[in-house]
Length: 310
Image (cartoon, helix red, strand yellow):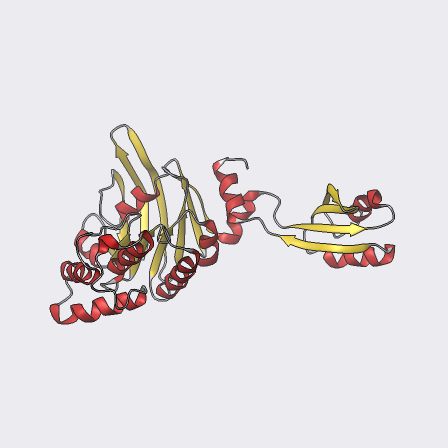
């Protein structure tokens, strides 16, 4: 549905995007992440036809972005980080204007405006002036303009910007619903949102792709894979790490600072070692306070890939 082939973009001496290639299938939500200035927005603007590429090509819904830009724009809904709003218009006036320039017939404009206002939680707000809205509600209007023509492709740049926690949860559910029969590229700095919504991540930095993998695969870049935090108590807590480390199911044990007289262990293992550790604790008469499975977060992997230490 979306294909980028060796896209590059130069602004004078600045090489903003360098040889970027990836594709997104129908029904997929792709997380497009990277630090500020990485080239995310420039790439999205090339995919939507807002700016031309210096090199490479892009295709959306079977149309070449640079050879058939109008056909692509008919099939793409784009929400930039700062929505393109006319602050002096009412919400209804603005969305009817967008509907008209999107080619929606006058007989269908009222229904289209009503539909998207209901979808984004603005029903009954037609007469509210856009400039009087909070940032979160302006973001809803921006999303409404992106979907008013019912496009098969959505490119969303920070769609949750300015929303409160309840609104973020609602936006997340809405994006998930939209993706059932659409293709979505989601760019956001809220990495937990990417983890919950996306099946795959493209990480870009310095204008180049550093990773293009599934969520589980990309977490492995954080190093160490799955770990277990184990808290055990016994008559001789200092001997506990060596005894746990001797188990066949355990690969490595790193003692952590003790807490409340208990041995605290960071355990690596090829499988889940908790059953074996619990059996050992029973045999030795140890108390067990915690056995927590800890999976590296997307944030951990992000920082590892761009070379930033916590």
